[in-house]
Length: 189
View 1 (cartoon, one colour):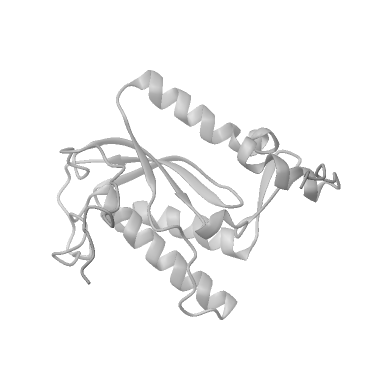
View 2: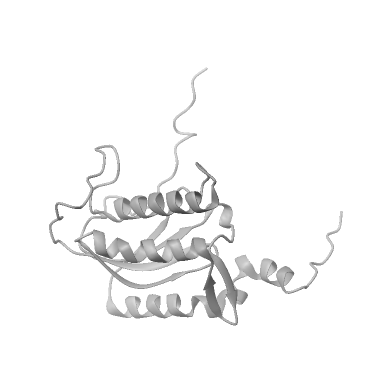
């Protein structure tokens, strides 16, 4: 029995036909596997990184150091995700930049940057936890092409304020309430 490729194809969330190695500004979000709280916690509106969160932060900062076409802007490591703004330039790659396999993302692209970041953080976190092969990140990531200064300013503000808004995020609200001691309402069967 053969499988139907139209039923088993992942739908791309990328802008069709767009070159993600093109110079510009990008807002990226990458989420922990199953949105687990792996990187620390929010306390008093501030993110408190645990050891895994420190690895994520440090490797994100290295991203700008090891890639000649990348400039990092605002970012925040949250309990279960990372938000960041990345600027790509047309600057040629340095000899120290690692090439990507021909079947992988375009070298120097947002896809290659995120793949490298997710790979090294997964390796380091798994070494720390002694959990070889465990997934740390969801398979994909989200990106938004930042098209103007007004949008850039709004996204920067969103990133900076993200820890203070954590308790109000509907995806986190029930988890935050349970951790604060509130009991969820019983469900009717």
